[in-house]
Length: 396
Image 1 (cartoon, rainbow, N blue to C red):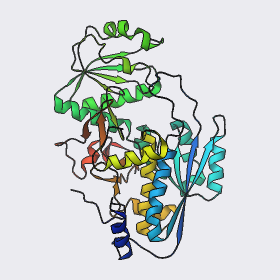
Image 2 (cartoon, one colour):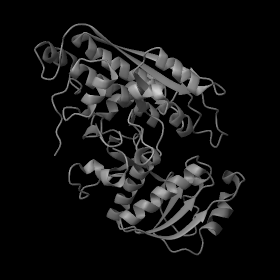
Image 3 (cartoon, rainbow, N blue to C red):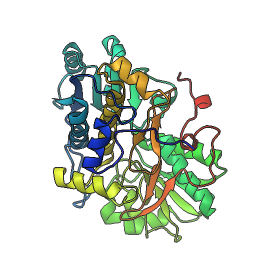
Image 4 (spheres, rainbow, N blue to C red):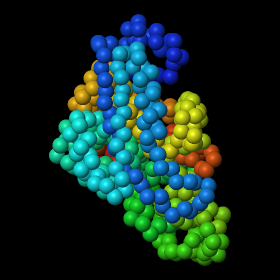
């Protein structure tokens, strides 16, 4: 079993934490004032067509988690004589992402939280000047970035599609729901998630008995009652797996299928890094603190940004360094471990920069389980039973 090393980021009462630090708490280096400059880089997003009045468009996903983490880092920094500063850069919708990112690099930032879609992320991560900095990718979930198109300067905070699909497959195997009916949406992202589902099905011995593409272009809210039963008729299966990352139709499959079957995937039972129903391992504390600060529930990007800056804080406090090379070296050392309110220490995979973390399996208003599930073992770290392992990637 992996154990937490002595870390200043355990959740401890304030006075006890201060006393431990001032009395030489192991792993804390107090050697003069040090400022750590962090940039938060993102681009404005165009609000998608409204699909539901229940889920309003959230324009500040990510930054609110980053601001909360800066507060936590600076709470510790008062005892270690360190100051963490966050500089936010927001590129307009029609702005030049690459030029703006080059300006951030020119300004000397070496630790950069990046909240971009896949295409612009590839552009900025591949800039030659960016090879010397450390990027924290808090928004992409593409397997390609973790398996073949890897960037040595990047750490990925969100679970990949493969990790999410494996988490669902582990739970389905435990329930012995082996016969899957896969429904795929029209977008490229849906096809990528469907590919991850097929990989997981093969990996865990599941059987995809049918596969269909949702081709209806009209509003599913008004036609689902008549269309879904016909669409799902004539197939014998245990569970309906949906790949609809944009949420165009997936929500309207539950309770409307021809046979009474559960729905999993991008809707129904979902695999996620964070969920508002998560309450274990001190999660209630951060849920309440985030709600008080942001006035809304924490989203996955907020949680990822929080962990990214806490990773910097952990490495900077323990190594008493503020440059990207030293931070990266400590993050990949055996001394690094991050408390992420999930009951296990979080670390990064050295070969592709993916954050190892438990994946939550949740319904709309309740936690169902947490993967990896008991019994799914791995030679070195059970968290590596989710997603592509070292031998399955070309990343080094």
